[in-house]
Length: 183
Image 1 (cartoon, rainbow, N blue to C red):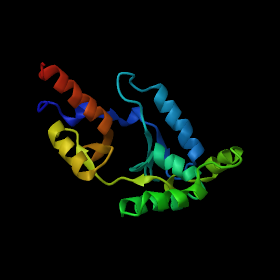
Image 2: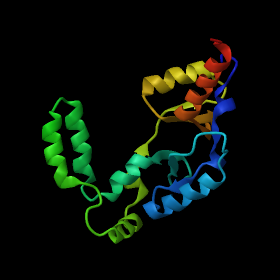
Image 3: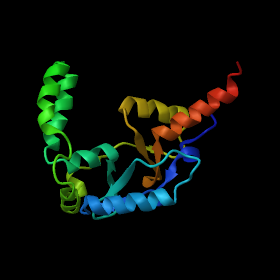
């Protein structure tokens, strides 16, 4: 595994769905579906689209969880519930409060309206970390674990060229273990 480099495992940017931060969620859905059609079937499916600013720099990701949260009018309250859970508030209390905030109650046609109104920049996850394409996979794994991230941008001479995803790293490590550890 030490011989592998990030560039051997990354997904090139031209394979990924990319949206502008000023696009709506509806447009993000279209770009996500288009990217899924051209993905490498031997690899894990995409779970996000990348977000660019007005200068076409990658500034964020819009993942599946952020997408669903954005469609719920009370998504900020639901996010606060996860903070309560991690701070030790009882599951019973959180459950009783969250019953009032179940996702997608009522008219599902409102989802179309919401998806066409919500801007990607308002719900995306900003990205700041990146790694060079030539670092070893071992170094990349260390950084992914330290940053607790599902993916990290890959650069070549400071320019964004791809994305290294946790799914692909885990798949590679699993294959390495299966082929190296007989028994």
